[in-house]
Image 1 (cartoon, rainbow, N blue to C red):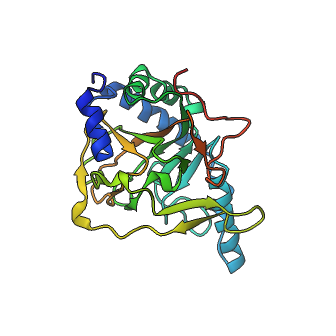
Image 2 (cartoon, one colour):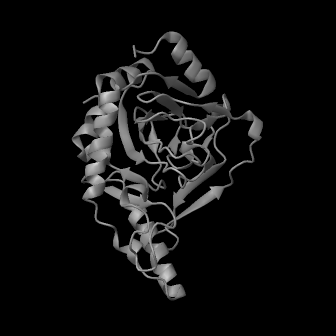
Length: 291
């Protein structure tokens, strides 16, 4: 993949997303997948996933445990599971490598291979071509989209979860580590839907209250016919504007759809909302992309 052309930049600005072929080589994709298998082999299943249900109180503890585990995951590498992969004693009823929905949110900081891809010259050059002055990395995720059980992701805008003032400062980089197809749950976009602002925000609730996050506003109902499928070959990537509306279908195939994705924000003259679930910490301030 050569660096972005002026036409690419224009297409991204017009449509709110852009497919890039060959950001990573097949070998680089395989290395990330192999490293991920090692991480899964060594993973400790979080306690709250093992809570046995016998009362409403257990249910509440589990919900609270889930929420707390998520909201404090910005500077850690944590495991998020598909529904129905544990029995009532908290033991796996599927192979552990098929149990995960995603791992997040700081692979870019603590895993050398993922860090190298995130800060790679290619990604830095893309960001420069898009005019980002002082980009920082907000979060990263490895998304599995497991065969048969990888669920649908309903229409949303990333800025709902990663809100800035002004808007338009956040870009997702979504890298296919295997082919993303119509059958295994590729992304679908509404081209040009990134210019109407956002209709919903996820915010932290005041300290000491539960749930820990809440939504302000509502997701609009979108006409299904407006969505355009965006299959991507292994090693290809999609640049995703923070306000473009996108979704993915369930994975009904027998092939997984592994993805490494991360979000960057141009921090130049930008305010990161203190109400966002994700906050920089002393251990991990948002690292600069250009270092």
